[in-house]
Image (cartoon, rainbow, N blue to C red; front, side, top):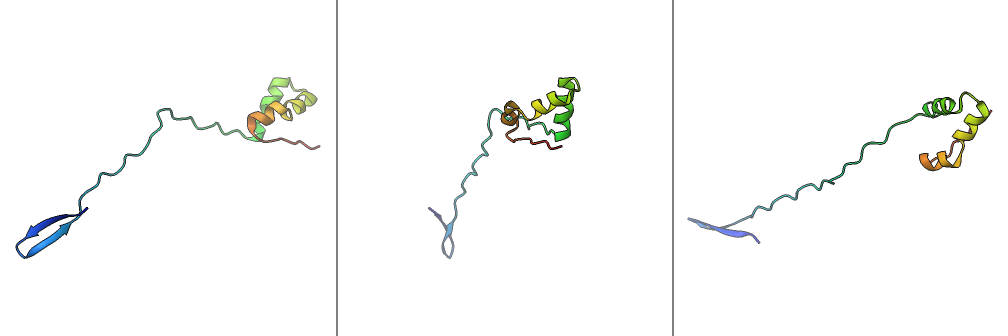
Length: 77
């Protein structure tokens, strides 16, 4: 509630101060996820598969890669 301050010519209501809430910070900050392009993924698959096209296709379109990325990769041609 507002407090009343007295002056010579009557009383004036005065607003009390409230403390501002502190921002909540988590104790463990997560690192930003690494940004990978599709080209980076395909290049890494070529390095892993030793340059075999069929093996690269199997790696990039695998279910494990889909789960890891959260997206499905479809290659055509």
